[in-house]
Every structure is written in C-alpha cells, then in structure tokens.
Length: 157
Image 1 (tube, helix red, strand yellow):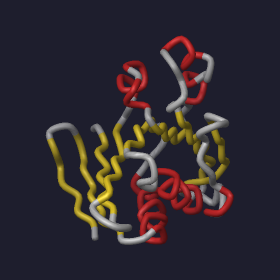
Image 2 (image 1 turned 135 degrees about the vertical axis):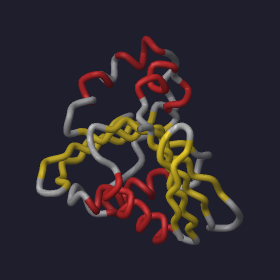
Image 3 (image 1 turned 180 degrees about the vertical axis):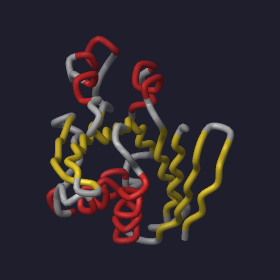
Image 4 (image 1 turned 60 degrees about the horizontal axis):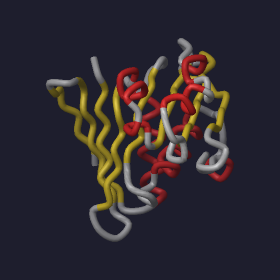
C-alpha cells in the first residue's frame, strides 16, 4: 500500500486507498512521517478527500477525533492541539480557496502560524506564490475511479 523513494526534489511516499476509512488510516500513518515545522500544500479536486486525510492526521496526534474535523472552507482556518512523540504540536488546517489575492491572504496571519511546533496543511495553497515558496512539501490526492484515491506525499529535504 505504500512506497517511499528518494526523488530529485525530496522524499516521496505513495498510497492507494479504496475508501474514506483507508484515507483516514493513511492520515494516521502520515502523522508518523511528518515532523514540525512543516507547511504542506494539500492538493486535490473538490471531494477527493483532503479533509478526510486531515481527520487521520489529527487523530494520530491526539488532537481531535475524525468526526470533530471539518472542512475549513468557510472559516478558512481550524486549529488543533496535539502531541507527537510526547511533545506538543499544533495542527493548522487552512482552506484558501475563497481568498482572492496575496493581500487578502496576509490577513490570515500565516506567518504567525509557522512556529517550530506547527504542522500547517493548506488546501488550494498552490494558488499563491507566497505559500508555494514557503512550502516544505505537498500532499496530492487524485481520484483513480470510484472511491479509490492515489495519495502522493513529496517532502523537500
């Protein structure tokens, strides 16, 4: 179900899931790979499971149960407090789909979120040069038919 291989741009992990429960499980597994500080682009079409993946990450960090994690489409930002290897970790889940430009993006205070104990996951972040520039990697989710998904995680070195 997973493979990890070095790539020119960093480390790559690939997963194939066949249900929402599988996607949550991959999120739990990713929580063991990701180390703060991280700013990751969370890429994928509407409905591919970006928030479902975050549910698993939040659960693995003891930050929230899956049913407590919802899409930040209208609130723009959800914050969860958890822990990783006994150390506090902040999980920030942003959705910048409705943000119009860099100036409006600045009002979110993204810079203040990027602390040493933070995992910042940004949906639709590829729309903005400033986010792409700061990103330490990306998680891309693609539908491959029915409920099946291909999840590709690329982390920069």
